[in-house]
Amino acid sequence: MMAIQQFACSNIVRAPRASRSLVWCVALASAIVAAPQFASGASSTADRVELTQAATDQAWRLQLLDFALDVANRVPTQGHERDRARLQELTGLALLDAGMPDRAATCARMIDGWRRGSLLAAIALEQAKRGDKSDDARALATQALAARASALDWQRERINAMVARVYAVLGDDTEANRLEKGLGEPEMGKVAATRAARFPAADFDAQTKMVDEWLATKNFDLVRNAADVSLELYSGNFADATRRSRIEAAVSAANAQLPFDLRIAHLLRLSDMAHKHADVTAANAFIDQAQAQCAAAKWLVEDEIVQLSAIASAKARVGNATGARKDLEAAVAKFDSARGGIVDIFRAQALRPIAEAYALLGDGAMARAVYGRALTDGASNPNARPRADDLVLTCTSMSRTRIEPDAAMDAQMRAIRDGLVQPW
Image 1: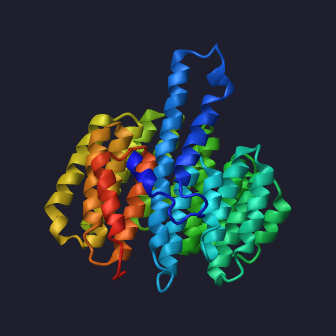
Image 2 (image 1 turned 120 degrees about the vertical axis):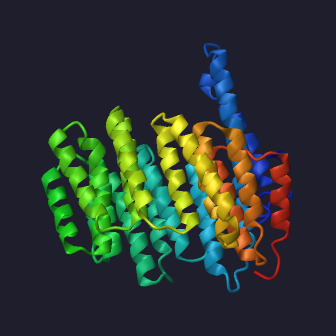
Image 3 (image 1 turned 45 degrees about the horizontal axis):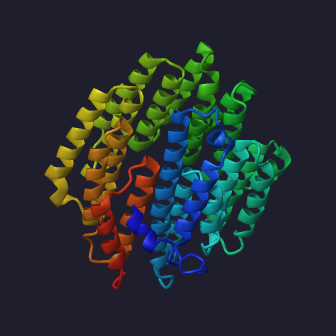
């Protein structure tokens, strides 16, 4: 990944010509090495190796995401401002996922429009969840609200809902309730889900009564929100068999009214939570249900591959490496046989989840090989905008899965970036 530092951050604040990402990497490594647990003579060799590896890992991820931001910033504002902002936000979220909230906030302030507020609110929510960063969370929440000025109603509501979630986590129900007033159906359940996650055992009957009322409306947004609240209640009430069954029934009732992709996502979340509570039987049963839902639906092949990869990832998480690998081999074979019929802008979209699942299995070689294919297929459209889309999405995916690009991929990524010219 070292080659990328030569051009990373080329569109970030132009201070010295030296790579800003390299400066950040050196500072990050120095901070970790200077940490008391690293410097202490009591630290074991294993601790030192682990901390050094953590610094190295953060360094190349920062370089990769700075490169992704450079690509996003190359998208013209004229006629493509929404695409540019979307890619900038995606990169900021990846920085947040990588444990770099300050860097993510810097990214947010480059965004013109409502997505600045959306990203700042996401950062604020993560800071609020940390517990020791409440002042930072409030400051970011205030900045997020300031980004509503030119937003459309639905965009303003989305920011309001996200910031309300921040205050719900901080325990400031007065401010959360104020921001929640007037939210439309797509957003109104988000704050309830956050409260359910924070206090899963408190007010259980009131929470489930609200879920039942939403389910009865048969309104898509409210039914989806009912599922979200139920899922947030699940882990905190897992030990209570009666409550657990009631929540599972609510998710099942919601799924009956929702499209197959959401059904599968909900079942896999239940599986993950059951596995977290050491109920391997239940975890595998939910995966089996998800697989049955996948088989029952009629999909575009690229969408089916995404679902097969999600199920394979769930199998990997519960320790079924053999089943996961078998599913991934089938997904690759399906892609290869159908590739010619998949529209070029959707090919990399199908490949990335396969790579992510291989990474979860610990098979870095296969993950890297599939990411390489995603880079190639993502660069085939004659227009630069979809090529930029796929390049940013592949970079952020590699950061999340901690699959470091090799030298050949570095060169390929640079070539794709340098080819982002008219027509967009």
